[in-house]
Length: 313
Image (cartoon, rainbow, N blue to C red; front, side, top):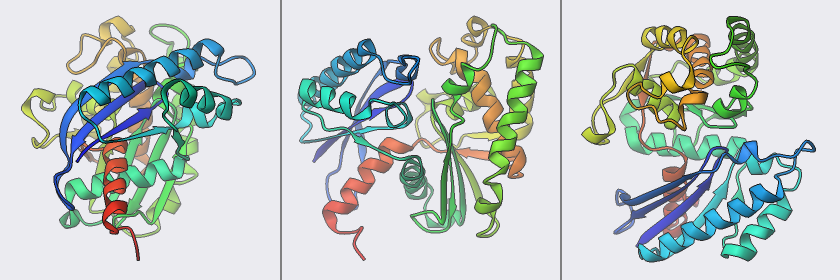
């Protein structure tokens, strides 16, 4: 079976196509297609997604449907995260997208986003990894989860996405005072949930997912994507702290010259690094294991589990 999932994030719309040959099989990637939309920047002063933003989203989703059909996808799913769920006109945008493309986007709440991403990390690392602590930095939110099973004991979402926080920083590069204030606010917010995530017991493995964390790891010397998904990649706290200091003095154009950092990702890399460094500090994490699977893969795994009845008690 060839499956497709459309993930509408705050920065990009991403289509992932995978093959699942039989129940329990490893979903094998067939094709990946993404469009930078920056939907979170298409907001009116009232907090609605603008008509222009909704039109662009509808066109991009329609394009994803066409690509999926060309790839022979038999089952296509669509999901949206913080940019759409927080908009004041969510239902109107969803209706417009469905009318234009036929895709009925499901809006994930933040905690569910964390749970599904945790499932992907658990399947990737397996039971031998023990108790996991997950960190996932998106454009609009930070997801944190911890647990020993396939579903976490605790899953939370905080409005600390790299794109959202970048809009709070003035200047390119921003001044040291702005970075210091952002750092203080981020740490205060993460600290409010830290006791809940630590309550279940000591972690065995800390895991990081998302493009932001992969970019930070690559900029700190992790293996490039061309070496494949099975190469072990880590992001250490020491390397990240040094990188944060460098990023704070670099304009976006200079950040884009770092290994693994695209021009589109460069402007928000500093804010993302501040969030990850804060989370690693507060949870006492010396090193993150970088997981190539995240939300999209978790959604596909959840769908396959439902088909086979694996998600039933």
